[in-house]
Length: 197
Image 1 (tube, rainbow, N blue to C red):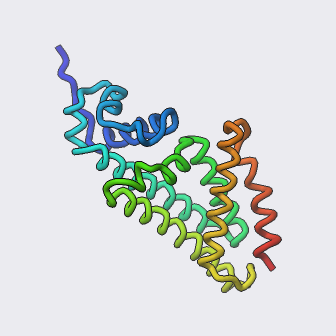
Image 2 (cartoon, rainbow, N blue to C red; image 1 turned 135 degrees about the horizontal axis):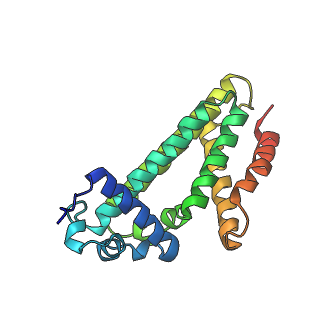
């Protein structure tokens, strides 16, 4: 009889992230539980406690993983030559992430994050601030290079994130029927009219 090999902790945690994403996409963040995750992974609930002590700990882990994915989007954008291409890249990569997971808006505005233990809200705040700072840096560099108008980079970053949020809202209200990445071109063109010299 073959002995079953245990998966490495990092691999199991990645599986948990994907399972949590599925649950959020199907039912919302409030339905994430150690019981549901264990069931979908095909393990006992006590097995989940080897990796996470509570639902809150799973959600904080999930947000940390999300932070890494958004950080990767900023890194990819910064490799582009100019500000227009960088901002276009953020739109494209962000919308690809949305289409792949369909979870970000449900997480950002979930009562599960905003009510209860403050650690979850603080982690979300950390994620959003990191993303905003990355966009702000891109705008500051664009101002220095003379590519975009002299604006307050903080306000510009908020407007940029706002354009992502509002586009996502309308995409969700329309049952995610069309590809949200199709919006990239229109958003970039209008952004150019508002921000670029």
